[in-house]
Amino acid sequence: MEKLIEVFRKKMTAPLPTFERELERKINWNARLISVRGSRGTGKTTLFLQHIKKTFSNNLNKVLYVSLDNIYFSNNTLVELAEKFVSHGGTHLFLDEVHKYENWSKEIKNLYDDFPELHIAFTGSSLLEILNGRADLSRRTLVYELTGLSFREYLSLIKAQDFPIFTLEEILKNNEQISAEIASKIKPFEFFDDYLSFGYYPYFLEGKDDYFNRLNETLNMILEVEVPFLRGLEIAYIPRIKKLLAVIGESAPFIPNITQLAAKIGISRQTLLIYLKYLEDAKLINQLYKKSRGLSVLEKPEKILMENTNLMELFNGENANTGNRRETFVLNQLLHSHEVDFSEESDFFVDSKYTFEVGGKNKKRKQIQEIPDSYIIADDIEFGTDRRIPIWLLGFMY
Image (cartoon, rainbow, N blue to C red; front, side):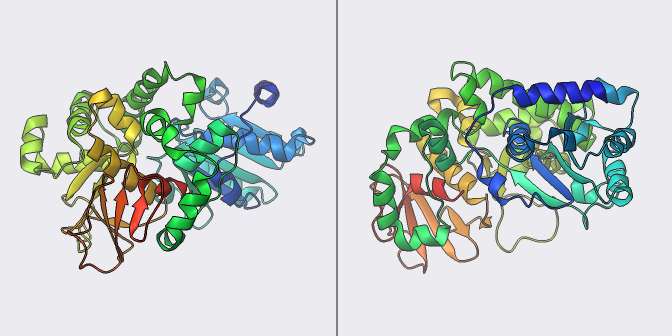
């Protein structure tokens, strides 16, 4: 355990970003068992280390951060570590990358039950099935999702300036006032295109020149390691799921012909639907369904989009379609805290109430003017007017 403590103490002396994610403020850190899931590269480790530094800087003997892919666990169990830690007065255990530790859910359940004085927080892949693991953690765990940066968080990070969060309802009701208030402090379109290209994953801070190499490495790690390990995909089939993602990346958003797409990849229709679910769980794509969809998990999606615009940029570079980027951004920001369905009349049907049509500054309401609670989400406008919402403003919801 001494070696783990040494590694942890070194991390505490290393500089960390002063900017804090919005999720850090929302987590109930007093709970005994906390889980933070998220796609690789979204900043889960930094979130933990920032909280530890802020909360325990004067009492580090009470806390321990450890990554469960550490070689220490080749000959030691998590339970053995916890026993030693608690016997030395430890009270807060932060576990990173739990999906890389066999029987993680069973051992964490045992720690929760056997050490009532111990607080445990752990991170894992977005593919991690916390509520469906071998041990029942569903009644014990507060589960949080860490997504990539919102446009607001991106601005706050690069400008070292805090910007307020607005609910969707506030934006729809007061978009003229809100957009004018923000635009008086910053020119959104000075930064919006950069955000769409390389602002979603925090590691752009380590250098824009290497950003897409890092993003490609992240993608390969998810497809070659996490999906096979956490979804049981045989290694031999990795090239097919990669080919599927490449086809989607070059075409999305699009309405899929499942039979034709399956034939192109060389897999069955059922396998294709399974692979699409894997990619969605891995936060690489988003799928839209009709509001009236059935209960089947493997139902045909009405539309497929990339999960975020940075992934679009990785596959398409400067050839990324402007209209496709707009739709991808809007859906990505909405899905953080809203239910979004496919719409026959427009682009998105939100929370079973709002109808959104996405377009450029000259987009007209003719297509949706007879639909109640319908709005144009318009690009290239700095200020909102009535039912025309500036697209960038949807990036201020978290």
